[in-house]
Image (cartoon, rainbow, N blue to C red; front, side, top):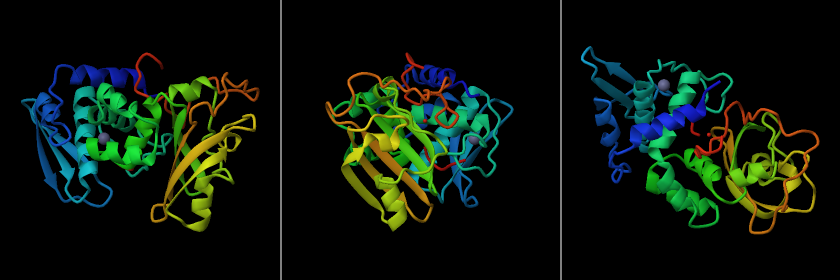
Length: 292
Ligand SMILES: [Zn+2]
């Protein structure tokens, strides 16, 4: 089991005292601190990066120049994670949502990278300016230069609204990252269950459409053993080429239950949104992208 809290703590300790004002353009604040130079080369499809470490302790981080800028930045920070955490690489072919199959070191370095790219305090301040929406996600992903799913996942985790970001592939739910407010209501999205009929995501997959939204999705479609009668905002995107679908779900003001739902079928004893603990980045309480 990946100790997510320890990784986030390590990342924030690593970032402490660094000038982060320019990281959206230039990650050298991070690479310099680990005595690494950055290089690029053409790699095979699906390969993102690796690190060569010399005897004197300096390193060269190489990323795949054929990948998009967001991915290259993620790869750079992922490799910094390998160096700081002292974790060996296992860059074998495994989709990132597949937490059960993915090497723990790789998950750890992904968590580390998300912290570096979306520094918690600044990111949360930006998220708290307004209600969740795809517009907000798009603006933040441009601002932080990260992938849509990395951004939306972190937004859902840190927002003060009851909110979830759900990653699906084919017709199955792979992972959900939930805000603290949503967890406190005992809203649980069951991993490995089918995409619920009636949801926007389900419609997009069925019709092969790219995006859609609905302000009145019944909450009990998404949440296990949930009372009927509450509406939910759902915005979904579907990528037929990759057979991937994402939904951002949230309650508008006063549209959810006031009290935590008594969830008799059981809120899982152990948090395992697909195998990870909470990805909210809030260290006082105890998250994506396709990459390697
Ligand atoms: Zn790695």
